[in-house]
Length: 560
Image (cartoon, rainbow, N blue to C red; front, side, top):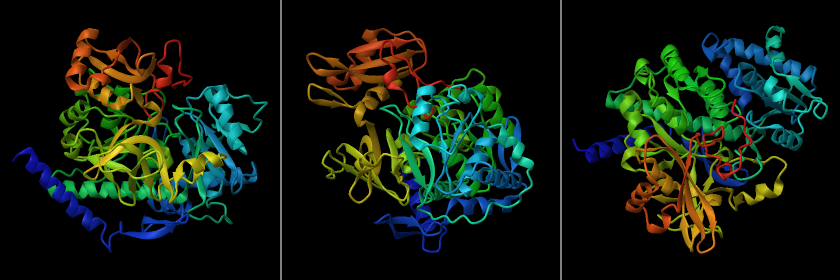
């Protein structure tokens, strides 16, 4: 059977599966409702708020919820720990509805417990970036004015205890595990459009902003992730390649990131599934050992993480056959990396996916997966249920199919706004609650393609250049480990593209220039190739911090 026929049959099966899953009598039935003044698609069957999900989790009782290196916590144990922590937050620290509880720590069970405890009180858990240095932490804390801050030793060392007297040691939370309460504090009234959590933007293009997600936003993400899981599993069954439905998910992203918190902590709870956690710097061999030992079935790595994994010299020593779903994201995914994943982890090739989203839309809006990934290079897939995408020009008008413009999203996923930034929030939406993502892309045949952040666009002599296109070409060169393209001021052309490259082989600038000339229009060929011996600086979501690539510039992030 030809690859075209295989793709056509897969697409037909997908359409059939979706029709069944989204039908009137399905748990994933979609209806139209008014959301913050605008009519849009929502899942009909959903919980009223996240506290209801926490209360429901008691029914999983003995099943494991969190597996850390030094702790294994069942759902029953977790609920009691959360209840006791919530009572302590209310009675000792006087935390109530609307108060902010800031958390600054490496991944650990206490982080998760604090999140659920604060949320159950109607308070607002605030995840602080654990890689920030002192001025960045101080800026965020001044912005949200928390009632109490819980931090581990490394983060406390970066904070001024006199300036922030509400600072506490997160290790205290471990001692509350046996306090005695068995129920959550009563008298808390929650609604789905109430604020639920604050996470911060990556800060790669300016000062980080506190992104306020509502209960509805996060539950909408849970709905589409459960839908994607059900769709993939149903299709695997129909193709005769489905593995066992159970098994824990591996989480290697930080808890202050949407992938760690919303996708890992919350979606896994909705499914009554376990999570296996790593702490500290990414260690490919440690991750492979965890997958083998715990039988992990799913993982949401960045491209950098999976690249290090499949290229590790000890890759063949580990049994990774349990891994069936890998949701790649955080940055552009080179096609050759996808091909290598499919080859080296064959059970993952049927359901592995590349998604597009941002913290402002609760992490996920589109997914490309299965044979679609290689058949349509560069796509991040079709919009998921309840997600509408519009490509617009600088005036807010829609552009024709195939034309580049700003990617705009309308969905119950889109944030309430930026914390304490009313004007910036207003600027983030076109009328009709269309979220302006700041990303340049285009729609073609129902699939979304991303070119670049608007702020990364290079204009050379009036011609638009999007770094992702050049980076994609360079990633295919066998001598290049990783690369990033930025614009540099030029007296003649205004701007020219410059490529920073980390090499794994020997190649001259002339050879790289010739390679690019064969694959790119002349004006897109980098004017200079700058070699680096160290890996490119990246933030917690795997995105290159391009501002740190300039000579003499250093990233302020502390990766630990």
